[in-house]
Length: 123
Image 1 (cartoon, rainbow, N blue to C red):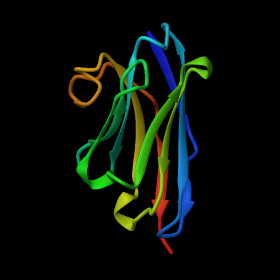
Image 2 (image 1 turned 180 degrees about the horizontal axis):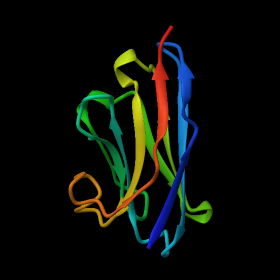
Image 3 (image 1 turned 135 degrees about the horizontal axis):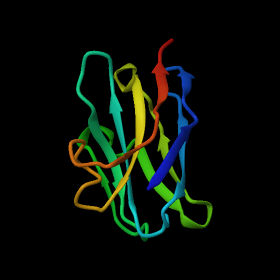
Image 4 (image 1 turned 60 degrees about the vertical axis):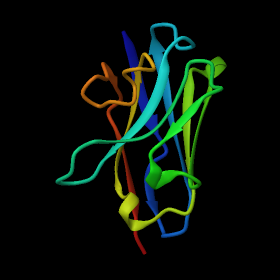
């Protein structure tokens, strides 16, 4: 079992930045791929970014390329999502995911989720 706790959400103006964190406990963290999804009201949960267990491969949805960066610190059991140049359409609840790499980017296959953190981009 892996327990995930997100933090770092909040209200930010368009063009601003936020950094989300997701801290894991339970199963050995270093051998698990991690991801971020988001879900806006009335919409399905969508993939945002993922990182493999060693941290040397990253994957992004097209709509965040060049603006968001995923990273991890295995010593701290934490994965981060640095979000820059935020837009109102980035407003959503952001969820951390953990699983094998072939599962962690597909919402229906992910077995471990955090509780979510709200990100609101508004002036």
